[in-house]
Length: 393
Image (cartoon, rainbow, N blue to C red):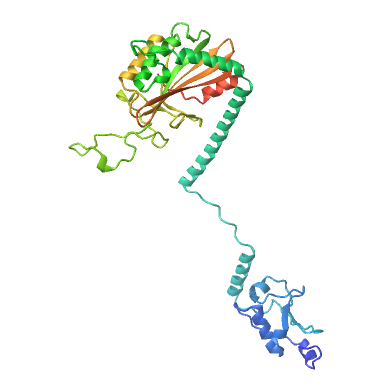
């Protein structure tokens, strides 16, 4: 309505009702109002009393049901010097109460969406989540252990003493020739071992005497053996490799007469008991430390035998292991480990003989030394803590 029109004053005090349905928007209300007063809808817009335009796409009912009583809808002309309005009162009849309540609930739901439901887990997902959390804790613990050992062994040890002690042990335990009854007319030593039969010859013929077991329990005069000698073996599962069927020799029953023994991986690592009456069991370790050899990297744990420091008992154990085939084609590595204390240097040595058997069947020996000082007691605790102990010998 133009302010200067003759009809202006007659329209100002006229009460006009507009029926608004559930599908009416402010755009459709504006068209109805403008059509009633005879003004073009394209030149007018609807504003509230705060001088904010009602969005044309909004539904009228939800907005007015939430508005304050006595709210106004201004029909404002877009031409200069024109300001006309229509007043809307929410107290007028909007239709059925059910429709009003439904529209009001829709508006409230849009303004206050319900909180997102809490994520639920299946038992499998919960176990996976718990496993990941425990794994992270174990990794952090083992990393802390590695840092402590590195700092203790590298920052507090005498490098010269470590080297001279290693040379002495290497000469006495691994540089001694095999007895003539094992290798006549040949100078055969630990580095020349090529199979596990020769490993047992070294254990019986060289190591027992080099450590002077049952007597002084010392090697190279000054390094005393402490604890026990531990033999640890890791094996692979028989027939866990892939062989084309046409290359398998089969007997009359259709079963293969030739077995395969793959290279070592943690996936094909054997853990089932074996031997006479399944006497040799696999012992697991919580440590993540690995030992790297020529052919593979080996985790902690395995089939373990602890040998006491007695020459006669040690010889009987070695002979029994060989006779009952403790090692075989499934064997991929044997560790022979023991600890020495060099009193002249006040140092401990962990001596680790590693005898790896490749998938081709040859054994390759090596040896490592790990010196650490006696004064740092937590190191000894950590070494014992991460080393699994068999339940019986």
